[in-house]
Amino acid sequence: MTAKCTRCRDKAVIELRRHNAAFCKPCFLHFFREQVKRAIDKEDMLSPPDRVLVAVSGGKDSLALWDVLVELGYDATGYHIVLWTGEDYASDSLAHTQAFADERGLKLIVHDLKEERDFTIPELRKATGRSTCGGCGLVKRHEISKAAADLGFDAVAIGHNLDDEAAVLLGNVLRWDAQYLSRQSPVLAGDDGFVKKVKPLYRLTERETAAYAFLRGIDYQVEECPLVAGNTQLRYKAVLDAIERTSPGAKAAFYQGFLDHGREHFEGSDHVELRACASCGMPTPNEVCSFCRMVEQVDKSRA
Ligand code: AMP
Ligand code: ZN
Image (cartoon, rainbow, N blue to C red; front, side, top):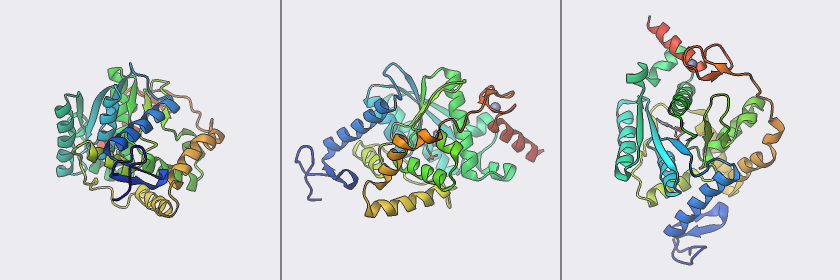
């Protein structure tokens, strides 16, 4: 690349068309941290004394997130769920996460579904009729929220980036799903027994988190989940990428525009009374939460 760094005029290592900018390594790392700081400030996500539980998969986004939160001075503990979507994939995900934590002396909590819940993700589809990714998402949300509540963390941080959030938004808009639109936010307030949930990478693209992880020397799991093929979100991402290629900045404008003047129109569409799940105690609008109902279905299908 012959471009010069927009900040210091040194030789650039990455060009960001959507910002009409190019950066050398130190200036890109600075840019990345500033974007995370801006996300945290703008959306009122965290304050320094907070104890944060970071959901880490072993992939580029969540390891980059953990790295940047520690760099910014947050007390951040990792939480990794062994989902068993594939034997090799599971041990590889854990190995990358564990190595990252060990090299930096960070605390990591490992939650193995097989050992602690006696089921794995591939079993869910047959037992419940849910899509694999849908069931997996429910498991991840429940397990991390429960761990954070039980262990008294102030916030949960998730590695969703701009591409993830824009793809979810596109899906919600295509169905004009008012309930989901009212809830779609880079920060979900902690109330009714839920710990606050934040997505500090929402201003950064997948390509930018990959570049950050690479430039920081983070050894992340490159391989995709073996069960992800055909996932709807991947198709929405491809559509948004196609638009972004000819209109740099369109993805960010789509998502940021929704945050700035779209979501307010949907507020209140999701108001539901919550109570404690009769089985696990987590907040739910029903007698028993969706996670516990899913576990019951798995048990039934085995009986
Ligand atoms: P995904 O659903 O795979 O796109 O992942 C979105 C985010 O969920 C990641 O950035 C992580 O913060 C979190 N996550 C995904 N997989 C795991 C896992 N196995 N354990 C803990 N957190 C995870
Ligand atoms: Zn429950």
